[in-house]
Image (cartoon, rainbow, N blue to C red; front, side, top):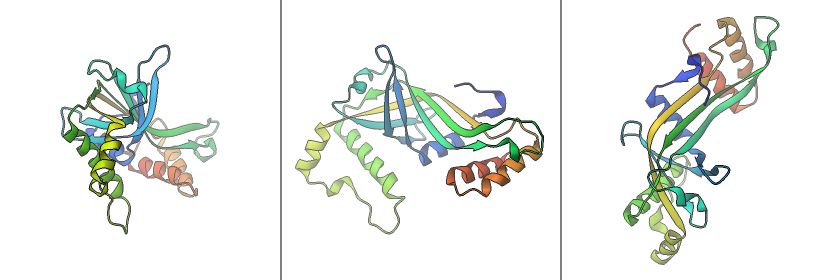
Length: 210
């Protein structure tokens, strides 16, 4: 990822917060000719290793997991809010459009989980994280499945873990603009009926004064 110094974010807690909040990401693994790419939800274990650990699973027929030998490097990509920025919002004249966004790249060497207990814990953690965001209902749990149903489902998936060896965060939020330009853009975004635009505006307001 191209990372100009102004846009680098290396606060691990902040990076982890974004991953946990937007845990549906891309996993990219070297393939024959072109990379193999999968869209999956991840579980983040913040306290595992230097940068944390990612866990997830695939349908067994998906061939991507066959590269998970603990030696082949993979890249997980997480996207934060993003939005178009109009130059009309700047105080400085004669500017051009751009796009503000947040992105995280986390790389490591995934390996298949062999222990059934570890796989069950992954499935429990995946559902628990998502169910916790649903108000007004009793959380669904893996325990609600009859044993024979769980056994069939378990045979149909392959779970993995990927210790994060390197993590990069890019917060492109107009840090390269004059303060008046940045505040003007943030103010305009706040008027839009677009949750992504308003989320970017909130992040822009949190930046130190230029």
